[in-house]
Image (tube, rainbow, N blue to C red; front, side, top):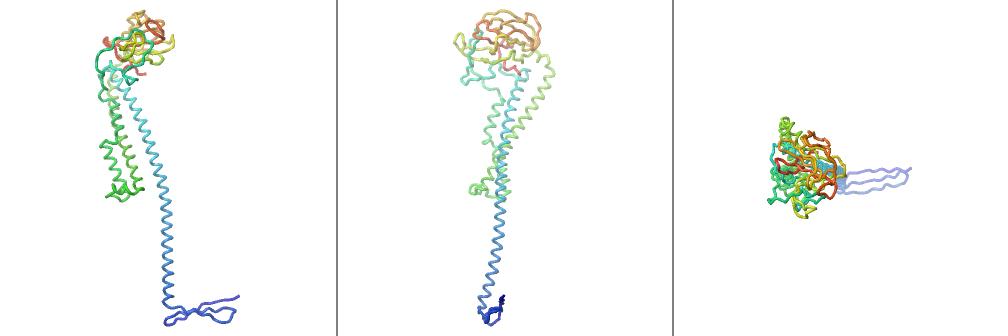
Length: 377
C-alpha cells in the first residue's frame, strides 16, 4: 500500500507543501503564498461559523413554524369554543325569556303588576287579525280604541337591546380593553391600532377581542337579568304564600286538550263575515273530549243559551268568572261546587258553531279578558 504525507516548510513569504508517496519515487511540492494560506484558513473559519449560525437559525425557524402551526390550531379551536359559548348563551337567553314570561303571568295573576288584560297576549298575525274559526255568534262588535303598546319593562325590549350590542358603549369599552390586553402580550402597547391593520397575523389575533368582548357583554347582561329575575321571583314567592286561596280560584288551567284555533282579539266572524271582537279563545278537539273546570268555584249556570248552545258558567270569586260554550254534554249542575280539574262538560258542536270546539272566556268584574294571561300549563 502506498502512503503520503504533507510537510510544511515555513519561508519568508511562502508555505511549501510537500507530498511524499509511499512506493513511488520523487517528492511533489507546492508553494502557497503565506497570505493565501492565512486567507484560506480565515475564510474556512468564517464559513464554519456562518454554517453554524444558519443551521441554528434554520432550527429556530423550524421550531417557530411548528409553534405557529400549533398556535393556529389552538386559535381555531379557541374561536370555535367562543362560538359554542355564544350559542349556549343565546339558548340561555331564550330560556330566560320563557321564564320571564311565566314570571310576568304570575305577577299579573296575583295582582302584583297591573296589565291591560283586554289586550291579546299572543298576536299570531302581523295585520292584527286572528285566524277565523268555527265559532258562533258569541262574537261582539269590535270596540273603537287605539292599539296598546307593549308593556313597559318587557323582555322583548331587553332582547332588542341585547341584539344591538355592537353599538353599546359598554361593549365598545370591553373590546378596547381586550385589544389593549392582546397588544400587551405582543409587546405593542403603543400604536397597535395601526399595526393590527397591516400585519395579517396580528390582525387575526385581534379578532379574538371582539369574541371575548361579545361573550363578556352578553354574560354580564344575562347575569344582571337573572339577578333581577331572582329578586322578582323571590318577592312573588313571598306574596304567593298569602294568596293560596286566591290562586285556587284563578283559572290557570286550560279546560280541555286540543289546539287553539282562534285567539282573543279582533277577527273576521265566520258567521257574520264582519270584523268583531272575539272575547275568548276557541279550542278545537274531537267531539266528546272532556272539559274541566279551570279553577275552584261554584256553577252559576248549566244549560242551553242562545248562540252558545250547551253552556256552563262558573263563579270563582274575586270577580272572576269562566264561560264554557258549545258543549255536547253537561255534567255540572247549577249550584255545584267544583275544584280545578273537575269534569263539567264535553266538547260539542251546539249553538252557532260550525265544528266541534270549546269557546272559553274569562271575565273579570264583567269585562272579558284574554284567557292566555291566566293559563300556566
